[in-house]
Length: 263
Ligand SMILES: [Mn+2]
Image (tube, rainbow, N blue to C red; front, side, top):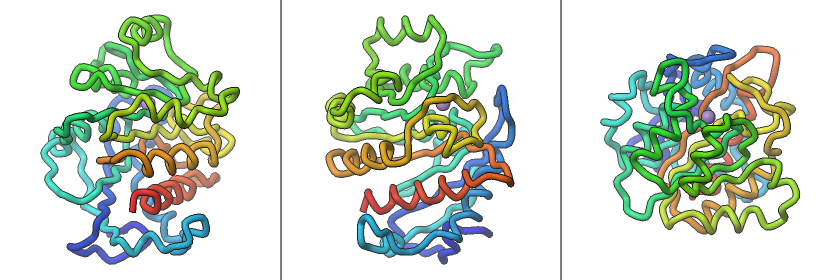
């Protein structure tokens, strides 16, 4: 079995990488079920040393769990390790969030799309509806990087006073990190839809959108997030691997940065 960075799995590891090759409702480009394997494979190319943090983050112990293919099993998953789930499509966040019963829990969604549709293509469990389903169990949602949604979703945001940071407003706002963090409670579940990133660095996603978040913009937000809040779990979704580009490697590097920031 392929493991993250080819590291041996062991009991005491603090981090667990969870492959979730779930793909049922992709609407544009397909192939997100192949993402976990591609990301694990690419992670073998990572340096152990992080030059920014001046440490070797893998030393906290990183184990790779067996893949989980259904939403029901995801919800039942029992472990006290810090889970970084790799999708798969965005709906996997719903059962992963349900696992966390902490009070004072916010959800930070980094995404190009609001994903607040009540139903999409006659399916309430579509990737385009994930945050609407999350809203039904936890209304403390902060969205960052949004640049594509329908009129009804925008009205839903305004009516329910959801903390939505549109991408167009972020570029001119020097205080965006503090403003985002101020909306969050003490505990945070982080979901990263890779289409939030600019297609120049992340072209291989199910539904690409121009004008996205840049690498260091994302890293500085995450660094501060992990410093100020208790992040309880992470998922990274919607990669559709393509042999000719580097997106798989960039995602594996993002995962390694997150591990470094967390511990
Ligand atoms: Mn999404």
